[in-house]
Image (tube, rainbow, N blue to C red; front, side, top):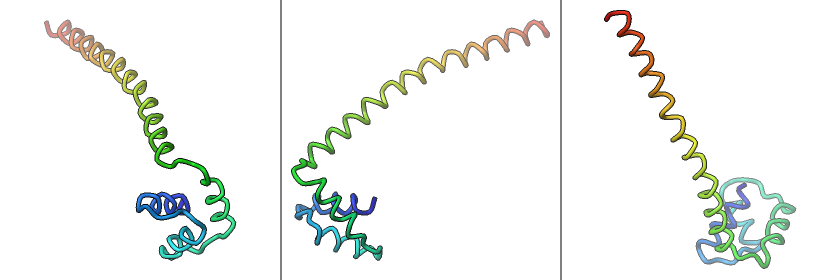
Length: 95
């Protein structure tokens, strides 16, 4: 992951994402640099619009989060009904 973070940091700063710059950023963290991972990352990022990919990733995570919120809304009334039934049972005992 540190290689991806290095590439994102370089992109954010407006620097070129190249083998030497990624190696420099990773080495600055005190981590040993794996040349094959650096070469693979830089090769896979050639021709990729990083800004567009980040925007697509943000939209995808938002779309998957929406159905989860709807599921929580359905669970809330069930809990209230249980409490109501328990209260009715207690009033029958004392009432």
